Amino acid sequence: MLAELPLITRAPRDLAGWAALFEHSRLPVLGETLESLRELAVNEDAVDARLLADAVVNDPLMTIKLLAHVAQLRRGREGSDTETVTEALVMLGVPPFFRAFQDEAELEVLLASQPQALDGFHRVLRRSRRAARFAMGFAVHRMDHDAAVIHEAALLHDFAELLLWQRAPALALAMEQRQQADPTLRSAAVQRELLNIELYALEHVLMLKWRLPALLVQITDEHAQHLTPQMRNVQLAIRVARHTALGWDNAALPDDVHDVAVLLNLSEDSALRLLHEIDAD
Image (cartoon, rainbow, N blue to C red; front, side, top):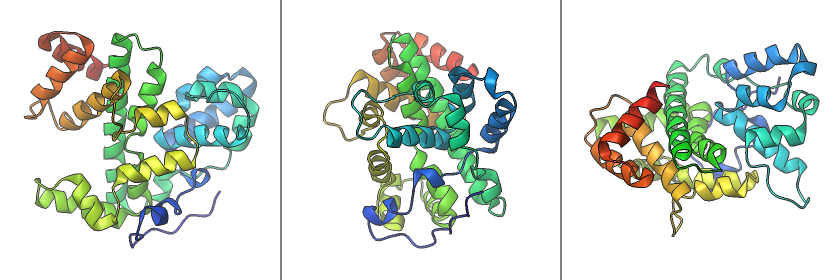
């Protein structure tokens, strides 16, 4: 087991300071992911990339660890990125995967003494998973051949917030309390005040540092001058997931439904039905 990293109690001064605190190899993994991998490892010869992908694909931190590990192995080689979890597993191979990830820290164990941090982490995780489901549903409707990458982009959109709850729970809690006390405060403003950065910028820097697939980085670039349909797909999925986290009566939802209808070339009634169908799956 890797030694536990110290908690971050004081925000670094700048983005470079934050980025230096995180290495993909030291990220923890969800307990449910580790349990699934242990079960598969018992009969390793019967395991293929698809079975492994099923165990990995809904864990944002394990997804990052895998993509970054494969990118590190491929450094300097010609050829396209391994853009999806399944592609990365095919390239890596089953036995090398189990060897590379046999000593992972469990997220729930690391946060066992920090129940508020664990709750905060799981709230973000639930939102990320719902966003990924919406994104996949939209991509399938659009018949986008990069649907798997779009799913990953939505799943990983808030991974810096997950890292904050894991490594800097006091700062994450302070941010949450500030916004609960004043709902008009924008997230970016609170982040700049308490963290000296915006979490979006940290995500982007870490994705580049860890050499995550170029298409994945592109789709998640919120500050891109030109929005592609894939970017719009992910952004709308994230919006819907955020606005429906506590129910379907959020005042912003009608605008979301309108924009989803435009993206998918549907009526607004049909778009709303589709959202409910995706959420019920």
